[in-house]
Length: 152
Image (cartoon, rainbow, N blue to C red; front, side, top):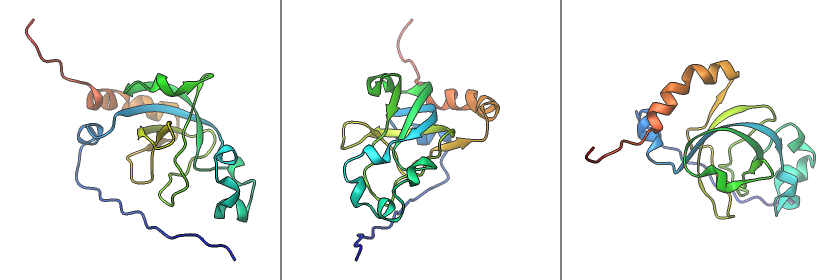
């Protein structure tokens, strides 16, 4: 018998602008999913995902190894090791699903495992191509820009 505690994700989205969303996240960056490292995360063997198919992470998963291409907010470089950022989102049912090769804008926070984390309820945005990202880049930069206050 497989036991899996059920917790539903309760995401509440309002009519917020990208700028309003950006205020709530300490880390916002654009990256490409290099691979998934679910099988390297503690507890993998006991998950319902691994029990169903222990190789699922080859096609997609919950703990991405990312090549960060551009940072819009936060010291993301503090979490990059050997050229990559690995996210440990825990084993919740609210984990966002990633696929190798995806180009994605990620809204993240510091998770409980000393890495950056994100979830299904965050405003992560997958782009079909580099061109699609570039067409929205200025809007993202404007939304994440800090206003400088002071006397000059």
